[in-house]
Length: 329
Image: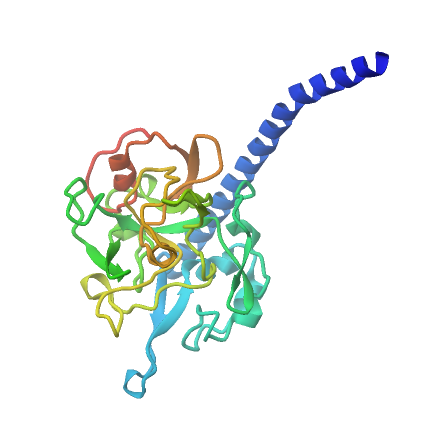
């Protein structure tokens, strides 16, 4: 009887203590995640101080099309930040001049980044696999994503006034639109001079670190680097309205960037089919943190944005020059 009483007391204590321990762990993880964003914010400021622009969101590397060598993906903005997040040895070990520098299947950097983790690019609360097989190279998947702008809720909607959009084609139709109204954009750079809305009112990097549920009830990934790693950017060339793939004449794939279309914290897949999800230009901003996700502003400050934030406000924050008065958020 005494033993049963002791066991019952221990079970009761565990029931009381365990939630507190979990809350303390999550609080520590959330602080660590925000510190990651702050570190990237400082890196962006230092990069801008050196080059007078923010890093390119991602770029394509042209090859000789006349000989059948189509453009291949260059690297993402994460690579440009490496020297400023204490990762200069990794940066100098990368081959950034050979076409396909961001493509682990055909490019030169697969062996270099194999199993390499870049800790400032990873939220400790994320339940998504940190390393994912990319062809024969297990590669790191980041928890954050660059903001290229915002788009209406559908290609024919007018609920957000953005016209700088290019349709993405896949799965026998349009799967979404990529904007160049943000700060981290494919094949071009922006600077603080290009942000009339103000650097304290414009998001440059957001959290994308939680799984979503597809129409069959299956948990899937739609984070920015998945399934081709933190290294990869786009295999489509051109800027603005001329942004397109050489063969299809429309953009087809861009990784580690998102055009904000959906509410913050979305956990339901907006498209069906695994291939459509991997080319979708509207990767959701979400996290495993309770109630919201972290976001980095262009002035280097970090905010925890609530999942209840008005989606129009989120789109305004994701656009550098929409002209709307935001106020407190």
